[in-house]
Image (cartoon, rainbow, N blue to C red; front, side, top):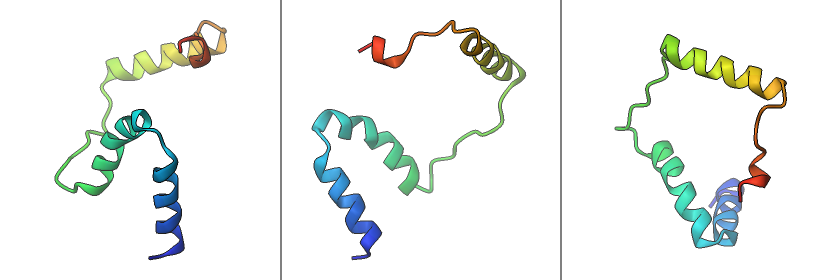
Length: 68
């Protein structure tokens, strides 16, 4: 086993079950070549992202630390 692969196994072994559940969809996307991810954004999606950036710059956001 390569050093990098061993490091990844070690990281996974350290994660609690709740974080493993959150990680599962991401890992699935990485290993399943049959899943196609749409990468083109619509104009509406671009506008939503632009608005989010503007709100963030103005301080109009809730830090994730405050949600949990």
